[in-house]
Every structure is written in structure tokens, then in C-alpha cells.
Length: 124
Image (cartoon, rainbow, N blue to C red):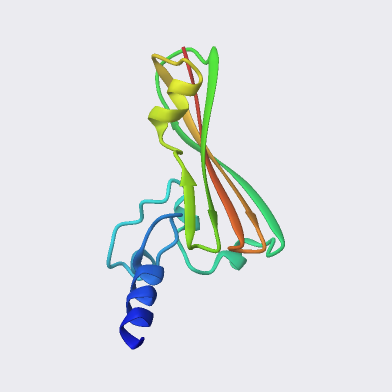
């Protein structure tokens, strides 16, 4: 039983499924969260412990912004995650061949009860 608890704690503290990881917070692993300020275990410092939404402009590349594609991943209690919020998935969803910009939107409810990370790609 003790080993199961230890394994669960290691996964919960050091996994980056939804971008929040104690390991990246203290510098043991790189911060892979597209919205760098969210890669911290203290999401309440962002405000909105009941509900929060944040849009983060990402990379602006060359190209016309004629089409829009969005791809999202979601998580529940930092234990279960689903979806594909990759740039490739967002570009495919919008039928985009040449990417012009990449943005990110994060929505959370009751801190970690539910969280959604969306990648928004615009281009042609």
C-alpha cells in the first residue's frame, strides 16, 4: 500500500500532463506549458479560484490570418486528461497549411477540478 501511495505522489508531483508540475516549478525539468505563468502549482495566485480564463498571445509568424483552427485538451483533478491541443491538431482543424500565429487560452474551474488548454492557430 505504501509503495502505491509513493508512486501516485511521484506521478502527481512530477508529471506535466496539464502543464503544472512541481518539478518544473523548482527547476528540475523544463517548463513545457505554452503559457509559462501557469507552470506553477500555485494557480490561485492568478486569481479566480472559482473560475479563471486567460488568453496568451503566442508566436506571430509570416502569413495571412485568413483561417482559424482550435484544438483543446482538458483535465479533471490533475488525474485524468484527454484531448490534443497541439499546434498540428489546431492547424488541421482549421484547414491551415501556412501558420501565421499561435495563441493559447486556458480556462479553469475550482482551481484544478477542471482545466482546459486550447491552442488557437491562424493562417492560410
